[in-house]
Image (tube, rainbow, N blue to C red; front, side, top):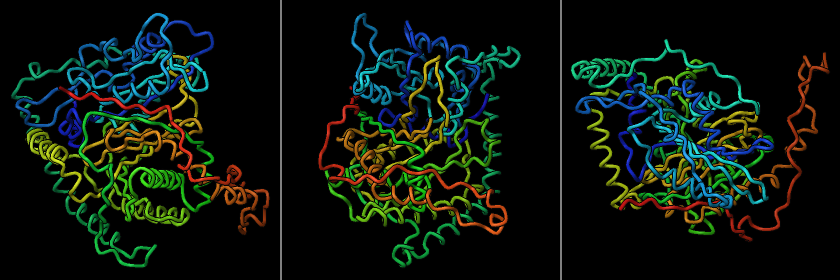
Length: 545
């Protein structure tokens, strides 16, 4: 038995039909040459042999007596592979392949459905045949794993445990029977034992929280003082440590209808463009998102006069030693996107300044921010009162009228730099699907993979009715970055690095310049002046009646 932390349990407490709390990704897969049969069956066989490699596959929830404390993970007595690995497209003899647009629509529907808490909290949905716009026929997999079980980095670790680096799947030794824990249950452990465990755990959590409180308050205080310092773009001192965000169509109460869209950009070119602009890859990705959002709002709604603010999850893992723990160790920070700035270069400078503040703040907070809170009565307080308050905020319309601190969520997850394979099929991309909540109805999650950057956009259908245009605007923003910064990135490669004293003595030891970015591309028109219909957006409704 392993008790959940407060942060992990919160994803369970706050979950509703409108706010499923699982994450996942949509992966297109290139089948091996000459492949015959069902990819769905091949994935089932592949995963069945690797269930023991990741605890999330074989553990399920157990509630405490009377819901007195956080739930616990226990070993499931068995894993029904037919339940967990399902066929996503209809198996009909002679049926045509599903189009990419239809696959994205199906992903939106499946992502909007809750995971069944009676079983281990994960599902794989396999597409046997998807027809790409270029005529190729590929397969696909949509994964769904509850956020209570792992965060973004934990998901990457899980992928590395179950995927291969070559088309030939590696041989996996069978599970060691000696490491199999007996199945616990409330009946096996006894009600008194479980209640005593809740009380003992809560006492320890109260003690740790009391010890951490002084240093946490000091760190938070110094961070607020730092954030209230003069704004580098205006020279004026901020009156408030935290600025409010403007209202946008993304700040609404959400329903059960979802849209999903995807985009892909080249990794090395984005890195070179970010460096040429004086920032990092993350700064460039934020600039691309900000430019795309500015374009989208200008053409479909109205662009706020204040900067949009993005909520960005930040890992609180201290070092590589934490990699074995797939539980959530994340915090949240706010980044201004500079969407009110018309000049794209000045917008980039504003983003770099905003992320610099975030990095400085997180350095002081990373070691002191708690990711746990006392277990006693938490299901009643957070899962009862807290969930009801959040539901009232969304369903009453308050989300449209009360002040907001963020407009959307943007997350950047590092992935594998080399191609990965699932059951012998090459994974072509990782387009993430994440969580939206009342008041934050748009989530853009970005994952790097095999020299590419994959964007996955999930939103409430009312908040993002033209999801295809936002995906197209992301691609157009990259083209604009090439036009503005491509020549600078190219000239940076041509210019030799300034020699250091050591380099003068040994010229051959100078480091090579950074890789060349693509040649500058001149934009003939506004990114949205010639709209093309994007076929890869899905919109579905799972409204409960």
